[in-house]
Image (cartoon, rainbow, N blue to C red; front, side, top):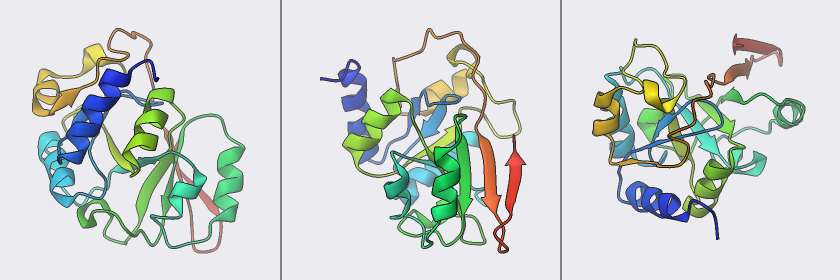
Length: 190
């Protein structure tokens, strides 16, 4: 049995019912929901007071999961991902099978393979990708640990994970990269 099984079960119930969660990831704390549920994604945008034209990150458990949500064969991307150790989000073209309001205007989506054990277990049991948007109101700084998250965010979600709340280690957002049409790597955020 997973050490944080009560947290996992509460998250699963919340996600399956279209709710939103506040949870620790392999980077900063995230506001999450079922990435295939348009109404849940809309709630995250509303909580963050973020315009819905600005895309959010989606977490998946492994490379093979990516193929269910993008319509490309990105062997080059998989090779790159395997060679890095810092959490890295990749922007893929031709997104599919996700909430329409989660994709950027150009049809792209930002996906990260999350290697955090809690998230891995949650993703495995949920069986679908989960949104991970930093736990802040849009235009405000990204909180680097749980104690920096505003009360508006904490009270605005349906479930707050108990795991790692006391962790005072400051985390950083992921790197973000994409490949252009010519196959060249573009670094969006280090």
